[in-house]
Length: 253
Image (tube, rainbow, N blue to C red; front, side, top):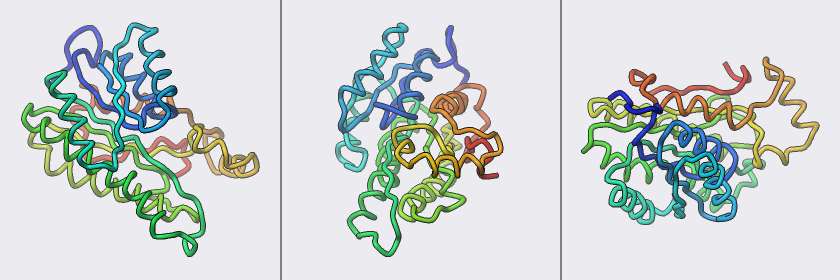
């Protein structure tokens, strides 16, 4: 299905989870710039979510706030049903919401493991489960799941996070095989070291150590990621599904 209108995503309805700040905000703003109506999801930090909306509206783009926890199956079903009742459809789902947990594996508590899996992996399941029901009926949909470079490279001190993000890769590839016949393309984007609130706290020495391993010699920006996501949900990517696109400056090849 080719996009129509003056912008590549004119008329499309998109949900971006965890879009109050960082990569999620950049994606929401970029998709709105391309013409989509954006539902900005958040759990806490309504002020930050409103800032995302203001950035969009100041340029004449359109969106709305939608608060729910991706780990809550019923809340997700209700939220996405509400989108379809209000707008008549849901075309694009960006599963960006996530948390990290750094620490030595042998000291990881079961409840910490469960929390990371519930938000990072079960959250993707919940949102895909709800959205694909409608995408299958309309026989068109685009889903991008945010994974991570460490899902494939691994990283000491991030066993929980890496496992949750690796699960997203398997989910993406399998679901892409299931739903390709319904014209639903599902891909994953694996960012490397991106400058966000999540990475800014690691300390200057650790930051320099990571940059030394990046062939492009710099950290990434949320906009670096958002541009790739916008491409994947556009008509220019109609023949791309089941892929993991790395945005890491060469950190992992």
